[in-house]
Image 1 (spheres, rainbow, N blue to C red):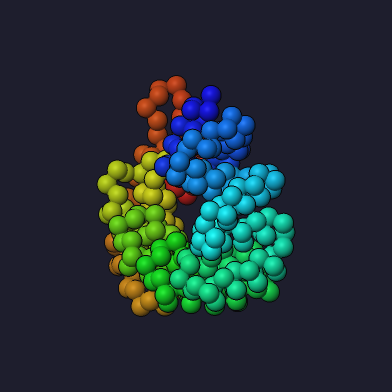
Image 2 (image 1 turned 60 degrees about the vertical axis):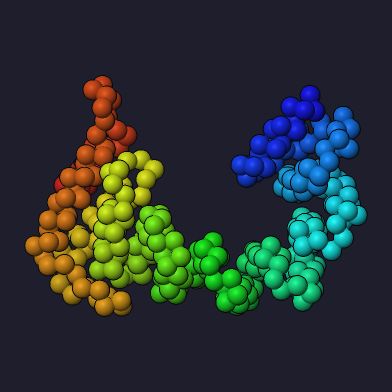
Length: 295
C-alpha cells in the first residue's frame, strides 16, 4: 500500500502535478505505515511536497509536522524558509508574512522563491499595496530579466489598472524572451486591441496565424487570432482615421477587405462539423454575425 502511494507521489513530483487532496491522502498512508524512514534522501522531497499540499487544503497540523522535520534537517535552507512564509500566509497573517519575507531577503536577496512570494502577498492585499508590488516586481526583473512568468505578471497588473500601454511594454519583453510561443504573441495582440492600437493588433494577430499552421480549431491560438483579424479589419474598414501609438501603418482598404473576407471564410469553416447529423455549437449564431445578418 505504501509502495503504491510512494510511486504516485513520485510521479506527481516529476510531472509537477499539484493534486493537493490526493497528495495529502497518499502522504498520510506513507506516514501511518512508517515508510518515511525507508525513503532515504527522497524523504525530504516528499515532506516538502506534503507540506505544500497540506497548506493548500488547510491541513496545517500536517504542514507543521513536515516543516518541523525539514527545519531540523535543513536549518536556514531557502526552500524551507519559503515554506515558513507560506505557513504564515495560511494563518491569514499577510503582515507577518511580509515582514518575514523582507527580513529573509535582507539576508539573501537572490532567493527567487521568497521574492516571488513577497510580490504575491503584496498583490493580494488590494489596491493600496499594488504600487509596491509593481515596484518590487520591477526590481526583481532588473535582477532576473529572463523570467518570462514575472513579465507576464507585470503585464497582468498593468492591465488590471487599465494601463494597457505599460502592459504592452511588459509583453514586448515576453516576446523578446519567448518569441516562438503563439499564445504570448496572441496576448500581445489582444492587449494592443484593448489599448486601441488597432493596426498593431491586426499585424500581431496575423503573426500568430503565420506561426501556427494547424488552422483554426478549438483550443488553439489560431482561431482566436482569426477572430482578432475579423474584428480589427472590420474596425479599420469602418474608420477612416485609425490612430496607432506604435506608428504601425494600416493596410490599404483593398487589403483590409480581403483580410475581412478571408477571416470570415476561415471562421465559418472552423464552426463546421464532420458529423452530418450535428452542427458545431453556436454555428448559426456565429455565421449570422459573420455575414452581418441580425437574428
